[in-house]
Amino acid sequence: MTMKNMLQGFVASAVVFAFGSGVASAQTCAETQFTSKNADFYLKAETEILVNDNPQAALVALNQLRAQTLNCYEFGAALRLGAAIKIQADDYEGAVVDLVAALDGGYVSEADRAQTIFNIAQIYLSTENLPKALSYYEQWLAAGGVPNRDQKWQLAVVNQKLDRNRDALVWAEQVLAADGVNAKREVYDFMIYLYDETGQLAKKAELLELLLAKNPTERRLWDAISGDYFQADEERKAFEVQKAMYLAGILQTEDEIMRVVNFYNRFNAPYQAAKILEKEINQGRISKTYERLELLANLYQVAREYQRAIPVIEEAAELSDNGQMFERLGRSYSEIQDWEKADVALTRAIAKGGLKDVGLAWVLIGQSRYERDDRSGAREAFRAASNRGARGWLDFMAAEDATEVAIARFEISSKLQDARAEKQRCDKLSVFGDQGLPEACETVTQRITEIETDLIAFDRRNS
Image (tube, rainbow, N blue to C red; front, top):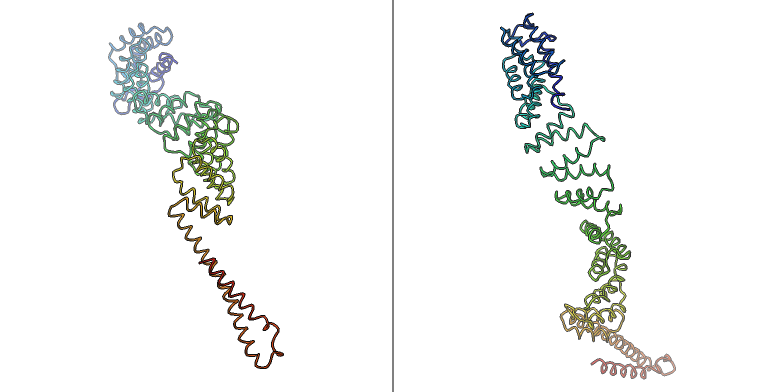
């Protein structure tokens, strides 16, 4: 609507003021009507502006009216009609002067005061005098003006143009609430801009989600939502958006999918991260490099999915130019107690080289052999390690051997002791003659000799 069309109603309101309302300012004017002569001049001016659309002729008639002696009621009506005529003649500054004079002189009724202030605001708005327009808008609100949806939009736009973005947001949010599901894209875009300017990125992201519900395939919205949540330090919400984008098939590039994998890992979901990473490697959307396989193995191991990690580590070990991944493979086999495969993997690790601690690898080989009862091979590995851990193992095995020897000697000694005790009992019984002796007494001396021979041989072997 143009300024002139909008103010046709204002011209009419001046006429109503003059002839219909019958209400003058209770504060300064007690008159309530025109004299007949002055009414003629007023009607002539009103006809020229409303019927003939001739502001120049209307102004001549109005000047004739003003040349007369006017009561306060007539003077106020002349000011109001003069403002309307000047608007039609594009004399906006003159129109404001007349309206302000009517307000200041008490020539506007309380019922019309708010509307008059609003008209001044509209005049300033049409001339792009935004500070003045906003000032009168605020006076209008203070006077009891109740803005409709379009007026709230004007208030939002004016405040924004004057860099009063937080005030603009107050009105823009009311516009969005009024529009509801029918809100246009321009409203969303305007509020998104304001949230950006005021640093309210989380609110901006929430608004983008509403807009996304209307445009679910618009990639720009998805990225903006995720980015704003991330900048607002709401990483969990950013992750949920990225996850939704992945599930919806929006993310396609390796970097985009890896972002989702890393989000899962960051939020303590290593198993889900590993499943996505393995699936995308198998489908070829993520390259099967040593680094990617290493990450996949890490994720499975952190998730305690050791069986799933092992095939990945094996594959990575073959791609590696050193033995570190084979060492890790050996550790993994150790964790599931597959000692033979652990031995093979750790031996390959040492042969391939590049280990940070070769001694530790030898210790693990020694342990794998110990667990398989290859004590000789275990000692060989521990000696090759030549470190504190290996010495501990060797001492432990030596203690085990010593204990085993002691137990074995104790068993032989116990047999010898028992046989000698048996011999003593036989010797006591022999005083009654050989006929009363138990049959075992006949062999006890021989058995003692054999046990003593075994003990001497045992001591020689273990000296």
